[in-house]
Amino acid sequence: MRNLPPPPERAGNLGDFSTGPRVLVLAAMALVVGSVGAIAAWALMQLISLVTNLVWFGRFSSAALTLAHAVPGPWMVFIPAAGGLVIGLMARFGSEKIRGHGIPEAIEAILYGRSRMSPKVAILKPLSSAISIGTGGPFGAEGPIIMTGGAFGSLFAQCFNLSAAERKTLLVAGGAAGMTAIFGTPIAAVLLAVELLLFEWKPRSFIPVAVASIVAVCWRPLIFAAGPLFPYAAGPVLSAWTLALCAMLGIVFGLQSGLMTTLVYAVEDLFERLPIHWMWWPAIGGIFVGLGGLIEPRALGVGYDVIGDLLADHMSTDAALKILVVKMAVWVIALSSGTSGGVLAPLLIMGGALGCAAGSLLPGDPAFWALVGMAAIMAGTMRAPLTGTVFAVELTGNTHMLLPVFTASIAAYGLTVLLLKRSILTERLARRGRHITREYTINAFELMRVSEIMTRDVDTLPADMTARAAADFLTEKADRHRMYPVVDGQGALLGAVTRGDVLRWRRQDGGGSDSLFDLVSDTSTPVAYPDEIVGRVADRMVSDDLGRMPVVDRDSRRLVGLIARRDLLRVQASTTEEEHAREAFYLRAPRKSPIGS
Image (tube, rainbow, N blue to C red; front, side, top):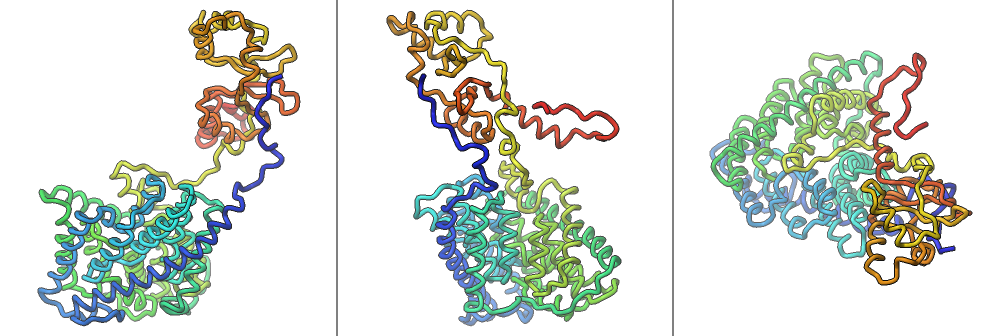
């Protein structure tokens, strides 16, 4: 009998996870990536402060400051416009990938670029973001640092012999480390990686990203400060009414999120209609940013001081509404113009300002409602409810806020999912012809065994059939299969014959009288086993470019079935049927599955 390939692992040897010791190597690399990401975050914040001091106050210093004391005047309009012009030039003659707020570009590199980023992006992205924010751009540093930290993680990974999936892990680890270093939110950074960047939940990627975030939070007291970035000690009086109000307000924030997302891309469409090169758009956007600064200077820049005032209840309702309107207007225009900057800090300001204003009409501390607004607007706009919830708790160090902000976040998230097909992050990718889905589901191929979907009644050819007879059989009718298994008298598989085989035999002299036993018993035919996971077999069929694969018993090697591409399609049909077929189980007999019971 011919030698079949050694059987794969038995189903009993399979585990819940596919992760192996290789994850330890990635975790060790994440120690380096996490440290570099934290240092990159510190360097970016220093650079932003340096640019801010130079252009607004004429001094060479990296001390953090607010633009609240900037003197309104012509320079307030000129400086953001000049910064936008510099960014436009950098994008056109440097790298167009520095445009935007960073996270969509990171997603695109992960899903479509095999997690490879260039050194040019690693240098130009933080530099352009520092110029944008330092000259008054109403952005945060988190998007650029995710892009920058991710670029360093990708570059580090490219120095080693790693797969695209492993490069993705280190890319995301660098981004998560940067976010952790700035905000001091390691768990939220990991959740953001899971909800937005990894597109999987596997120990192979989860553990290294967590390691990088933990390393970054260990660096944070040395390069920034220890403790929560915006401490908030007050705790809500939890009741059903409080949670109901949080849910109702979450719907309001969901509407705000949808409005802002719609406005961003509506204004971007207006920029697209301009009869000038996109290089000039950031400068035009900068003019509007400067005009907004004349109305409310605190709407410019990162605005961490504004977030602090909202959570400390140091802001009146009128001031909150003023910042909300101006910040939203300049942020929408600037982001649509294609300049460089993050969205997270502006979202916190706009959600917090609306929450503060609403808090004047609701029971309790306005700062409480401001924090609820910050979490909900983040959850709705970025479609990341777990990240928004944990981020608000870690940002303030107040675990008592967990349930209220979670309630509001879920309400905002649910509304935006129903109202908008895409988030502010994925809409940009869709406009580039990239479609992604952010719903994590179990792969049906990993749940089923070959025995559940294989064809049991298999047409075979006997081992004593001659090559000439086999050729006549395969060519006499058009509906013959492309491949037939060859079995002996006991039904054991010897090999397989394809149409290509018989054509080759016909061209060979003397091949017509040989038996199939003589022709196929020395060849190797890929086979599947009844207890194998369908996904493993599908992978082998793709790698070997096979349309059909014999299924044999592990012990006797007897042919028991055949698995074909159409059987794999029935698995997908079963998944679709489970999703859409609705029935009352106790009122009538259940419908039969496409792959049988």
